[in-house]
Image (cartoon, rainbow, N blue to C red; front, side, top):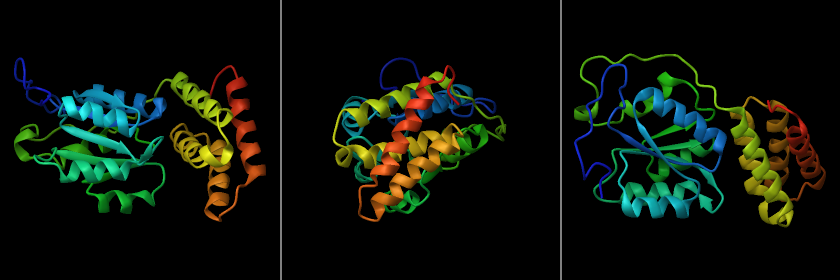
Length: 238
């Protein structure tokens, strides 16, 4: 059913809360990235729902119809382009479908799959977030007149970053490196850039480059594991 099929009609958007009345489904496995989007939605007036994988998103979409879907391109059970293709082909089509990734090369793949736009991680700027959605909404769903674009930046809870690091460490320890390293390197690269943790981002990129050359870069994997463990051992994450 539509998110607002039952109950009172949603309040109309206002210049200072231009996404009021919208529900955003975020398909993202990173708690840190989701926390940033939660804060952006809160400041904008939108409601947020979260799915952490493709399977979870599909279960959600069988029951509810959000106004906007934001899909991370790298998910634990597949590429976000798969879900974008399904959403773009569905009738009636959702109002806005956006892709999101820390890898800019993913933008072409996302647009080819049918996404209306692309958000480059880190997604922290309120004006950029609102404009990405508002510029693609039908005119009747936008606030009347001009809306106030704020250049404010959100600051996600650092505990969410630590949770992501714990997830990566558990994934690396729970399977053979060749089976999980592509996902973990992509995951860590994205959250590290979002958290401005450039040493970790560079370590993840080194693993990704090695994998792209067709090998298993064991020394780089060991270095990445050690860096994750050192972050977890710190009293405060970056």
